[in-house]
Image (tube, rainbow, N blue to C red; front, side, top):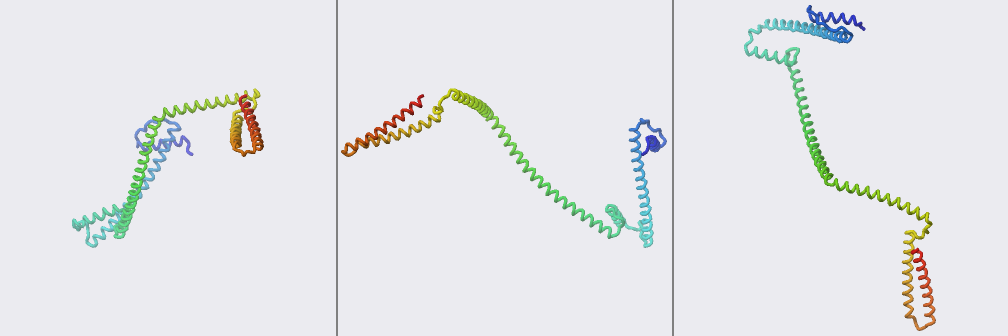
Length: 277
């Protein structure tokens, strides 16, 4: 790797060549500046080398073309054809052939070279036409997709506007319902707390569990069943009035029914007393 001093010498030499004897402008001598100028000098040297090689190649090709032109000129003169002997039409045709050859970048002006070049151009034209049709197809497809997307976008925008309007209209109602829901939730929590407290107080006071609501509901249902049974017994008792004249048997049946009825009434009264405690 070149040292900073070697880089500086090369930069100085390169700048002197660039300005060709003129005064080289002042520049700051530090590592950054020298490194940048050194890189520029190396790149410029590489470009100059490539340019010299290219010029040498072009000079060699020019000599080859000139030699071929001299050979063709001698050949034409040997058969009596010189540029001066050509008619205006011939000169125009020759110029056209030369221009065409240059346009087609032909190495020579043989018929085969022209035909091959024209074939390449025709194939290129066909490829371009195929590419153009494919691009048109893609453009139509993109246009169709774009139109569909715009329609969907417009529909979404309309839906969004409709939702915004509904939100504005239903906003106060929803807010009121939300406040009501919060109020009901708070009340439900209060009722649950109160219910737990009341249950605790009932348990602490030693209240008989038979006086709880569900117990009383069950007892009321049993009471209704007893009443229905009493009604059936009364109906049976009423039917005894139509008994046959055998009075002794009728009295026995009546007494049995009365005792059963009295027992049921006593049980009903006891239930009622328990419910009123």
